[in-house]
Image (tube, rainbow, N blue to C red; front, top):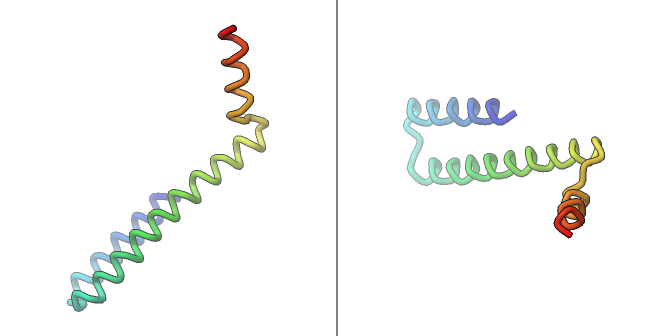
Length: 71
């Protein structure tokens, strides 16, 4: 998933360079690109969390086991 977003952003940067977009527009596009990247990372984290929950793993249980094993 991340590779797809990175490829899209790369293509966007190439198009901007070729078309000579004005600085204000490039700035806005840069902000949007950063937002897309950040949201993508958050989506990836949420997908991982969903997979963990579906598999029955919870970090809280892991912490409980560690606490009991330390006693």
